[in-house]
Structure formats: C-alpha cells, structure tokens
Length: 139
Image (cartoon, rainbow, N blue to C red; front, top):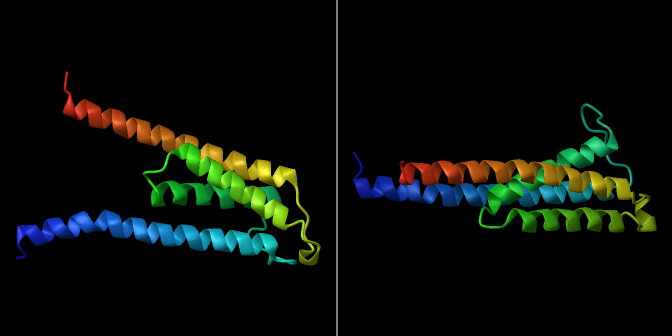
C-alpha cells in the first residue's frame, strides 16, 4: 500500500492536471470555431442546425470550458473575452477573399449564449459558496 503522502500528493495534482486538460480543450475548441467560421464553404455538421443555433452552441461550449479552465477569472472577464472573440470572427468574415459575410445577429447570438451559460455557472458558484459557509458555520 502506498504511503499516505503519495496518495495526498496524487489527489493534490489531479485538479491541476484537470485544469491543463480543460485549457487544452478550450483552445482546441476555440481554434475549431474560428476555422469553421472562416472557411469559405464550411462542411455541414450532423443535425444541420441553423446558423444561429451553431453559433449559440459554440459559444456556450467555449464559455463553459473557459469557466472550467480558468476558475480564478471573474465571469464578467470571461464574458468580455467571448464577446471580443465573437466580434473578431464577424470582423474577419468581412475579408472578401473568405467569401463570408458578417452578421450582427450572429454576434448577439454568441453573446446571448455566453451570458446564459455564465449566469448558470455564477449561480452554481454562489450555491457552492453558500453550502461551504454553512458547513463551516453551523447554526
């Protein structure tokens, strides 16, 4: 049986390695979203959801991964990062060689999905904080 110190060390390193994996997933997802948004003729994805639904799904996933990958960041900072990323995509779609077109409604869908996910995460964080305080300060 391994010594207690080794067991404690392995548990202590798990959150850090999970954060690394989540950060890698976030940056891969962001790269995928950017490439798909800038391809002149992006492939049709399974289920063929509407353009706005695809935007919302992408930014919901990116926001969730961002909150998990960077838990020390304020949710408002993550929202601003998502809004800037969405705006950057729309500006890049104005490049004539790409054969794409920018749409403010896409950016609004991006921001709406991000905001919705981050509000839920904020609620979960708040509830987790409340339960943590209750267990430390029993009445």
